[in-house]
Image (cartoon, rainbow, N blue to C red):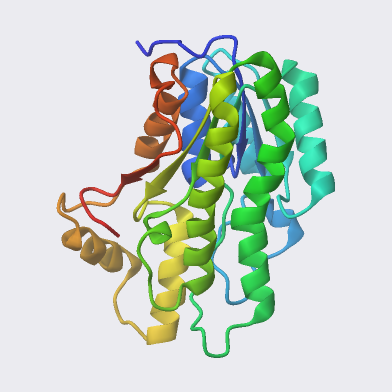
Length: 278
């Protein structure tokens, strides 16, 4: 049986209806936290051309809430655009109305793009930075004051191995993830005297729909004859553990960083990539 060490805590997870965010939300719920999840939904339209992401349907958001509630905790789910102040305000207000507070903030919403610097579209660059970096700023800015007042808080930012290792045709993504590490360290220093920690997790390749979106882009761009499954197998073969990471592994690490025993872990970026640097 999982230790319910987060009983009485309230969490907010961006990108929480799918992929790593969903896995983190379920991990927090299993440990007793009430969880609010917000995701940019498919009702807004398809993923813009040239960008890689996954927009879940409203049914997936509702299904994730049911899975959270099955852990014996409360859940709410909202459409969330982390690029918009009004949307972030609404998400925070709904979470505080439902649970009375926000003890834990998980920033997991994100997008990527395979674009060379030569001819890089400005719109794509700005959208990735606004989502992956400024979106984290927006939610932290809104949640940190209450954590400081209550003398307890946990902020976990999902970055990437791309934060420390560059990749051809990924300038915007790598820049946004590197920026998350700087943001994480500054927030950790601000929260440290008040019992608030802030850390980043740097996943390598994770078995999510977003990964498959990226692989489809690469496959089309390079006229690659391999199937998605073969591409994943080939990536796994380059990892020391000969596998890629599953979303549940990210969830379990994020949940541990919210434990009282993890108070001393702050301003860190923790790589989880099956032994690989990328």
